[in-house]
Image (cartoon, rainbow, N blue to C red; front, side):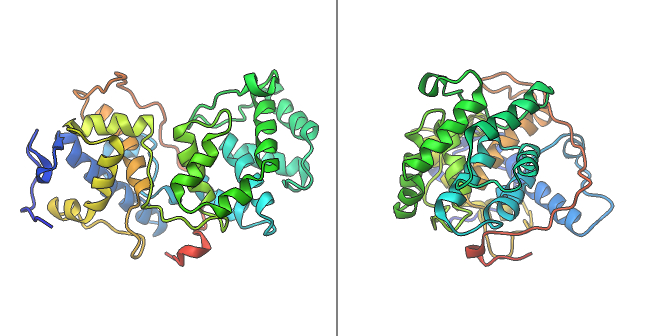
Length: 331
Protein backbone atom coordinates (compact mmCIF):
# COMPACT_ATOMS: atom_id res chain seq x y z
CA UNK A 1 0.00 0.00 0.00
CA UNK A 2 1.16 3.52 -0.78
CA UNK A 3 2.38 5.11 2.45
CA UNK A 4 2.28 8.77 3.43
CA UNK A 5 4.01 10.65 6.20
CA UNK A 6 1.90 11.11 9.28
CA UNK A 7 -0.14 14.19 8.54
CA UNK A 8 -3.62 15.47 8.02
CA UNK A 9 -5.00 15.08 4.51
CA UNK A 10 -5.16 18.32 2.57
CA UNK A 11 -8.61 19.62 1.82
CA UNK A 12 -9.98 18.41 -1.54
CA UNK A 13 -6.88 16.34 -2.32
CA UNK A 14 -7.55 13.06 -4.13
CA UNK A 15 -7.23 10.25 -1.55
CA UNK A 16 -4.73 7.75 -2.94
CA UNK A 17 -5.76 8.66 -6.48
CA UNK A 18 -9.10 6.85 -6.40
CA UNK A 19 -11.39 9.85 -6.89
CA UNK A 20 -12.33 10.61 -3.26
CA UNK A 21 -11.82 14.22 -2.23
CA UNK A 22 -11.85 14.54 1.58
CA UNK A 23 -12.72 17.49 3.76
CA UNK A 24 -11.26 18.08 7.21
CA UNK A 25 -14.10 15.95 8.60
CA UNK A 26 -12.42 12.87 7.12
CA UNK A 27 -9.55 13.12 9.60
CA UNK A 28 -12.11 13.72 12.34
CA UNK A 29 -13.67 10.38 11.34
CA UNK A 30 -10.51 8.53 12.42
CA UNK A 31 -9.89 10.67 15.48
CA UNK A 32 -13.47 10.11 16.61
CA UNK A 33 -13.19 6.32 16.14
CA UNK A 34 -9.90 6.32 18.07
CA UNK A 35 -11.23 8.34 21.00
CA UNK A 36 -14.56 6.52 21.17
CA UNK A 37 -12.69 3.21 21.38
CA UNK A 38 -10.44 4.64 24.10
CA UNK A 39 -13.57 5.51 26.08
CA UNK A 40 -14.69 1.89 25.85
CA UNK A 41 -11.41 0.57 27.22
CA UNK A 42 -11.17 3.29 29.87
CA UNK A 43 -14.63 2.36 31.12
CA UNK A 44 -13.73 -1.34 31.03
CA UNK A 45 -10.68 -0.58 33.19
CA UNK A 46 -12.72 1.64 35.57
CA UNK A 47 -10.58 4.70 34.90
CA UNK A 48 -11.93 7.87 36.56
CA UNK A 49 -11.56 9.96 33.41
CA UNK A 50 -13.04 8.44 30.27
CA UNK A 51 -12.12 11.23 27.85
CA UNK A 52 -11.06 14.84 27.62
CA UNK A 53 -13.07 15.38 24.44
CA UNK A 54 -15.75 17.90 25.43
CA UNK A 55 -18.20 16.73 22.74
CA UNK A 56 -17.91 13.06 23.71
CA UNK A 57 -18.33 14.05 27.35
CA UNK A 58 -21.59 15.86 26.71
CA UNK A 59 -23.35 13.82 24.03
CA UNK A 60 -24.23 10.18 23.47
CA UNK A 61 -22.43 8.28 20.70
CA UNK A 62 -22.37 4.60 19.89
CA UNK A 63 -19.19 2.53 20.15
CA UNK A 64 -16.70 2.21 17.33
CA UNK A 65 -17.66 -1.47 17.20
CA UNK A 66 -21.40 -2.01 16.80
CA UNK A 67 -21.29 -5.25 18.79
CA UNK A 68 -20.12 -3.37 21.91
CA UNK A 69 -23.26 -1.26 22.20
CA UNK A 70 -25.65 -2.10 25.01
CA UNK A 71 -28.52 -3.11 22.71
CA UNK A 72 -26.31 -5.52 20.74
CA UNK A 73 -24.80 -6.97 23.90
CA UNK A 74 -28.23 -7.59 25.34
CA UNK A 75 -29.30 -9.25 22.09
CA UNK A 76 -26.40 -11.69 22.23
CA UNK A 77 -26.52 -12.56 25.93
CA UNK A 78 -30.25 -12.35 26.74
CA UNK A 79 -32.03 -13.03 23.45
CA UNK A 80 -29.97 -15.27 21.19
CA UNK A 81 -27.96 -17.46 23.53
CA UNK A 82 -30.52 -17.88 26.28
CA UNK A 83 -33.04 -20.10 24.49
CA UNK A 84 -33.21 -23.50 22.81
CA UNK A 85 -31.62 -24.26 19.44
CA UNK A 86 -34.85 -24.27 17.41
CA UNK A 87 -34.05 -22.00 14.42
CA UNK A 88 -37.60 -20.65 14.26
CA UNK A 89 -37.52 -19.78 17.94
CA UNK A 90 -34.14 -18.06 17.68
CA UNK A 91 -35.28 -15.97 14.72
CA UNK A 92 -38.61 -15.16 16.37
CA UNK A 93 -36.84 -13.84 19.47
CA UNK A 94 -34.39 -11.78 17.41
CA UNK A 95 -37.24 -10.22 15.43
CA UNK A 96 -39.38 -9.44 18.47
CA UNK A 97 -36.42 -7.81 20.18
CA UNK A 98 -35.11 -5.91 17.17
CA UNK A 99 -38.42 -4.70 15.73
CA UNK A 100 -38.92 -2.73 18.94
CA UNK A 101 -35.15 -2.41 19.51
CA UNK A 102 -35.68 -1.49 23.13
CA UNK A 103 -34.39 -3.46 26.11
CA UNK A 104 -37.15 -2.20 28.38
CA UNK A 105 -39.87 -3.45 26.01
CA UNK A 106 -38.28 -6.90 25.86
CA UNK A 107 -37.87 -7.03 29.66
CA UNK A 108 -41.49 -6.13 30.24
CA UNK A 109 -42.75 -8.65 27.69
CA UNK A 110 -40.62 -11.36 29.26
CA UNK A 111 -41.73 -10.51 32.78
CA UNK A 112 -45.37 -10.80 31.72
CA UNK A 113 -44.96 -13.90 29.53
CA UNK A 114 -42.19 -15.70 31.47
CA UNK A 115 -40.75 -16.92 28.16
CA UNK A 116 -40.73 -15.26 24.75
CA UNK A 117 -40.92 -18.02 22.17
CA UNK A 118 -42.52 -18.81 18.85
CA UNK A 119 -43.94 -22.07 20.19
CA UNK A 120 -46.08 -20.20 22.73
CA UNK A 121 -46.76 -17.08 20.67
CA UNK A 122 -50.27 -15.72 21.16
CA UNK A 123 -51.06 -12.53 19.27
CA UNK A 124 -53.75 -11.41 21.73
CA UNK A 125 -51.44 -11.83 24.74
CA UNK A 126 -48.59 -9.88 23.17
CA UNK A 127 -50.96 -7.20 21.93
CA UNK A 128 -52.56 -6.79 25.35
CA UNK A 129 -49.19 -6.38 27.08
CA UNK A 130 -47.87 -3.85 24.58
CA UNK A 131 -51.15 -1.93 24.49
CA UNK A 132 -51.03 -1.65 28.26
CA UNK A 133 -47.63 0.04 28.00
CA UNK A 134 -48.89 2.44 25.36
CA UNK A 135 -51.99 3.26 27.39
CA UNK A 136 -49.64 4.17 30.25
CA UNK A 137 -47.76 6.54 27.93
CA UNK A 138 -44.70 4.27 27.76
CA UNK A 139 -42.86 4.24 24.44
CA UNK A 140 -42.34 0.69 23.18
CA UNK A 141 -40.11 1.50 20.19
CA UNK A 142 -36.56 2.78 20.15
CA UNK A 143 -35.92 6.04 18.32
CA UNK A 144 -32.88 4.54 16.55
CA UNK A 145 -34.83 4.01 13.36
CA UNK A 146 -38.40 4.46 12.16
CA UNK A 147 -40.40 1.53 10.85
CA UNK A 148 -43.41 1.85 8.59
CA UNK A 149 -46.61 0.55 10.18
CA UNK A 150 -47.39 -2.12 7.53
CA UNK A 151 -51.08 -1.29 8.06
CA UNK A 152 -51.77 -1.58 4.34
CA UNK A 153 -50.79 -5.26 4.52
CA UNK A 154 -52.18 -6.37 7.88
CA UNK A 155 -54.96 -3.84 8.50
CA UNK A 156 -54.46 -3.36 12.24
CA UNK A 157 -55.03 -0.02 13.92
CA UNK A 158 -51.84 0.09 15.94
CA UNK A 159 -48.32 -0.27 14.59
CA UNK A 160 -47.19 -2.95 17.02
CA UNK A 161 -50.17 -5.13 16.05
CA UNK A 162 -49.12 -5.08 12.40
CA UNK A 163 -45.52 -5.80 13.34
CA UNK A 164 -46.52 -8.81 15.44
CA UNK A 165 -48.44 -10.21 12.48
CA UNK A 166 -45.46 -9.49 10.23
CA UNK A 167 -43.13 -11.44 12.52
CA UNK A 168 -45.64 -14.31 12.62
CA UNK A 169 -45.76 -14.35 8.82
CA UNK A 170 -41.97 -14.32 8.56
CA UNK A 171 -41.65 -17.41 10.74
CA UNK A 172 -44.55 -19.24 9.07
CA UNK A 173 -43.02 -18.41 5.69
CA UNK A 174 -39.96 -20.47 6.61
CA UNK A 175 -37.63 -17.48 6.82
CA UNK A 176 -35.40 -19.16 9.41
CA UNK A 177 -34.82 -22.12 7.12
CA UNK A 178 -34.29 -19.85 4.09
CA UNK A 179 -31.69 -17.83 5.96
CA UNK A 180 -29.89 -20.99 7.00
CA UNK A 181 -29.69 -22.01 3.33
CA UNK A 182 -28.59 -18.58 2.12
CA UNK A 183 -25.08 -18.41 0.70
CA UNK A 184 -24.04 -14.90 1.74
CA UNK A 185 -25.12 -11.78 3.61
CA UNK A 186 -26.53 -10.06 0.52
CA UNK A 187 -28.83 -13.03 -0.12
CA UNK A 188 -30.02 -12.97 3.48
CA UNK A 189 -30.53 -9.20 3.28
CA UNK A 190 -32.68 -9.63 0.16
CA UNK A 191 -34.81 -12.26 1.91
CA UNK A 192 -35.66 -9.74 4.63
CA UNK A 193 -36.48 -7.01 2.10
CA UNK A 194 -39.43 -9.04 0.82
CA UNK A 195 -41.50 -8.28 3.91
CA UNK A 196 -43.57 -5.12 4.49
CA UNK A 197 -42.10 -2.48 6.79
CA UNK A 198 -38.54 -3.76 6.22
CA UNK A 199 -36.62 -1.11 4.27
CA UNK A 200 -33.05 -1.24 3.03
CA UNK A 201 -31.40 0.20 6.15
CA UNK A 202 -33.42 -1.93 8.56
CA UNK A 203 -32.82 -5.08 6.50
CA UNK A 204 -29.07 -4.54 6.74
CA UNK A 205 -29.23 -4.00 10.48
CA UNK A 206 -31.45 -7.07 10.96
CA UNK A 207 -29.28 -9.38 8.88
CA UNK A 208 -26.29 -8.27 10.95
CA UNK A 209 -28.21 -9.14 14.11
CA UNK A 210 -29.25 -12.53 12.72
CA UNK A 211 -25.61 -13.19 11.91
CA UNK A 212 -24.71 -12.88 15.60
CA UNK A 213 -26.59 -16.17 16.01
CA UNK A 214 -25.75 -19.65 14.71
CA UNK A 215 -28.45 -19.43 12.04
CA UNK A 216 -25.97 -17.96 9.56
CA UNK A 217 -22.23 -17.66 9.27
CA UNK A 218 -21.69 -14.74 6.92
CA UNK A 219 -18.48 -12.79 6.58
CA UNK A 220 -19.30 -9.22 7.71
CA UNK A 221 -16.83 -7.94 5.11
CA UNK A 222 -18.83 -9.24 2.15
CA UNK A 223 -21.76 -6.80 2.13
CA UNK A 224 -22.72 -3.33 3.35
CA UNK A 225 -25.63 -0.94 2.90
CA UNK A 226 -25.25 2.75 3.71
CA UNK A 227 -28.00 4.12 5.92
CA UNK A 228 -29.23 7.74 5.95
CA UNK A 229 -26.90 8.74 8.79
CA UNK A 230 -23.88 7.17 7.10
CA UNK A 231 -24.70 8.98 3.86
CA UNK A 232 -24.79 12.27 5.77
CA UNK A 233 -21.41 11.43 7.30
CA UNK A 234 -19.88 10.54 3.93
CA UNK A 235 -21.16 13.79 2.44
CA UNK A 236 -19.42 15.70 5.22
CA UNK A 237 -16.19 13.70 4.99
CA UNK A 238 -15.87 14.10 1.22
CA UNK A 239 -16.55 17.03 -1.05
CA UNK A 240 -16.61 14.63 -4.01
CA UNK A 241 -16.72 10.85 -4.26
CA UNK A 242 -16.51 10.74 -8.04
CA UNK A 243 -18.21 7.72 -9.55
CA UNK A 244 -18.09 5.76 -6.30
CA UNK A 245 -21.23 4.64 -4.47
CA UNK A 246 -21.64 5.27 -0.75
CA UNK A 247 -21.04 1.56 -0.24
CA UNK A 248 -17.78 1.82 -2.20
CA UNK A 249 -16.65 4.58 0.15
CA UNK A 250 -17.42 2.47 3.23
CA UNK A 251 -15.46 -0.43 1.72
CA UNK A 252 -12.51 1.83 0.96
CA UNK A 253 -12.46 3.21 4.50
CA UNK A 254 -12.74 -0.24 6.06
CA UNK A 255 -10.00 -1.71 3.89
CA UNK A 256 -7.59 1.16 4.60
CA UNK A 257 -8.24 1.66 8.31
CA UNK A 258 -4.76 0.68 9.48
CA UNK A 259 -3.18 3.04 6.96
CA UNK A 260 -5.24 6.03 8.10
CA UNK A 261 -4.74 5.38 11.81
CA UNK A 262 -0.99 5.18 11.15
CA UNK A 263 -1.10 8.28 8.97
CA UNK A 264 -2.55 10.26 11.85
CA UNK A 265 -0.35 8.66 14.52
CA UNK A 266 -3.34 7.02 16.25
CA UNK A 267 -2.71 3.73 18.02
CA UNK A 268 -6.23 2.36 17.66
CA UNK A 269 -6.97 -0.46 20.10
CA UNK A 270 -8.66 -3.26 18.20
CA UNK A 271 -10.70 -6.03 19.76
CA UNK A 272 -7.81 -8.46 19.89
CA UNK A 273 -7.14 -9.12 16.19
CA UNK A 274 -10.63 -8.22 14.98
CA UNK A 275 -10.46 -5.12 12.78
CA UNK A 276 -13.36 -2.75 12.24
CA UNK A 277 -15.84 -4.40 9.91
CA UNK A 278 -18.04 -2.84 7.22
CA UNK A 279 -20.97 -2.50 9.63
CA UNK A 280 -18.71 -0.70 12.12
CA UNK A 281 -17.32 1.79 9.60
CA UNK A 282 -20.83 2.39 8.29
CA UNK A 283 -21.98 3.22 11.82
CA UNK A 284 -18.97 5.45 12.49
CA UNK A 285 -19.93 7.58 9.48
CA UNK A 286 -23.34 8.03 11.09
CA UNK A 287 -21.82 9.03 14.43
CA UNK A 288 -19.35 11.43 12.81
CA UNK A 289 -22.25 13.07 10.99
CA UNK A 290 -23.61 13.92 14.46
CA UNK A 291 -20.26 14.74 16.02
CA UNK A 292 -19.41 17.21 13.26
CA UNK A 293 -22.58 19.20 13.94
CA UNK A 294 -20.65 20.59 16.91
CA UNK A 295 -17.03 20.00 15.82
CA UNK A 296 -17.49 21.27 12.26
CA UNK A 297 -20.75 23.29 12.12
CA UNK A 298 -19.76 24.72 8.74
CA UNK A 299 -20.56 21.29 7.25
CA UNK A 300 -24.34 21.31 7.54
CA UNK A 301 -25.09 18.31 5.33
CA UNK A 302 -28.13 17.95 3.13
CA UNK A 303 -30.59 17.80 6.04
CA UNK A 304 -29.16 20.93 7.68
CA UNK A 305 -29.15 19.52 11.22
CA UNK A 306 -26.97 21.50 13.59
CA UNK A 307 -27.72 20.01 16.99
CA UNK A 308 -27.13 16.66 18.69
CA UNK A 309 -30.27 15.58 20.51
CA UNK A 310 -29.13 12.89 22.92
CA UNK A 311 -27.04 13.85 25.93
CA UNK A 312 -24.65 11.36 27.50
CA UNK A 313 -26.07 9.77 30.65
CA UNK A 314 -23.93 7.14 32.41
CA UNK A 315 -25.64 3.78 32.91
CA UNK A 316 -25.48 2.32 36.39
CA UNK A 317 -25.67 -1.30 35.22
CA UNK A 318 -22.38 -2.70 34.01
CA UNK A 319 -22.20 -4.88 30.88
CA UNK A 320 -20.61 -8.30 30.99
CA UNK A 321 -19.28 -8.31 27.44
CA UNK A 322 -19.82 -11.35 25.30
CA UNK A 323 -19.58 -12.10 21.61
CA UNK A 324 -21.02 -14.57 19.10
CA UNK A 325 -19.61 -18.01 19.86
CA UNK A 326 -18.24 -18.41 16.34
CA UNK A 327 -16.00 -15.35 16.72
CA UNK A 328 -13.87 -17.00 19.42
CA UNK A 329 -13.30 -13.52 20.81
CA UNK A 330 -12.66 -12.44 24.36
CA UNK A 331 -11.55 -9.15 25.91
